[in-house]
Length: 456
Image (cartoon, rainbow, N blue to C red; front, side, top):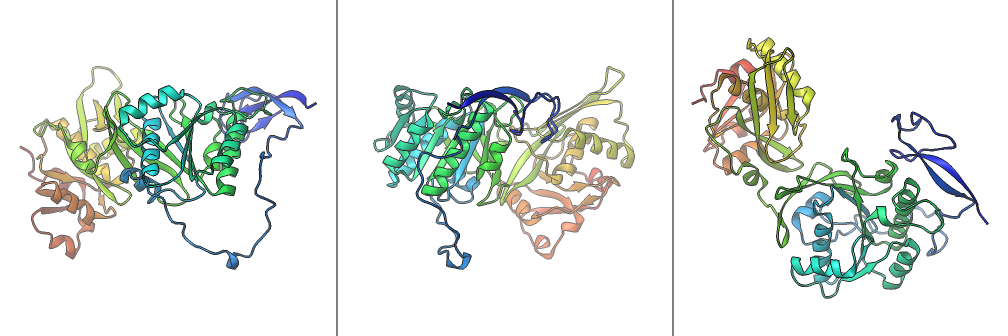
């Protein structure tokens, strides 16, 4: 009989210790250790089945190169994955409760079964009747989708071996447990071992596994940080659960870029793709308001037009207040210091509130010039022309530096009907000079940008 004892695990990185520690030696986080029971001599690391002993092979003898990707039938989802899911991949999808993770995966599994793929949907949180109700709301074509309500990983492993599906969905990883681990489901030990178990299944049987992960109040996937290191791809579903828009963002992807985003709109019949995020993000904009500036950010290969809003007013307290939503707080403070020093505007004693409309979170340096213009526009109470797009990186000397993919940004602005683009002078090329139908205004520093007669 295995000897039972307890150990302390870091909830952030999974570091194991025989005693409680104030600071984790692995990730240097404070007060993250929790005590959990462990079984000395347990065989938790072994699978209940194996295709055989692995033997080393020569790299030149391995046939096949790039694996054929499997399309989910949802373009925005495939974009974030890098073109579709890869055989034998383990994908973690995290997000706030009620954001739409299960709805998205149910729509993905429906599309896969329609194209002839065998899919197994494993739920540890909902009953068969609850899943049926949600499927009825999403529409038809769920006839060939197989559902399993189970939380015991041994039984799930046997079901996967018996059914031999091409794709498996685990909803969610925090509800799964292994019998030989004595701690409760959702604990550090259970989540780590469950993920390791599923990873071995995915690699040995070459099937795609999507696992749903809950997030903490800080926005990270609950459980040890090692969970994200074990999987092939980590996707985060972002957005306000009370709003209609949802953003799927790649954080880690071994088979593609992590710069892409997918935009969805939540409707009564499920999630619908937003094929033109720029138009979607700019809807409802007040064109004649001061402090509003349109800029263009590159999310992977896709240019996205976004609105930066700023509100600057005199402070009623001794220390001016600064607040940002969607962008780096320290970056806004830096830009305000550049404005005061290089442009000669006394805004140090003013409160400043900066917001990226639409719920996006962007740290791209190309937003600097638009942020400066929005702050100055609100400070002077003069609106920037609503048909003008501004982008560029601002340095500490007030210079406006070049940004990448300027031509794609200008093309997107022209497509959406904008008439003027203010951009860094160092980005000017022969191709941009010959661009028809839109005025190109190059600037070298923020003084030149603030002197442009583009306010009402």
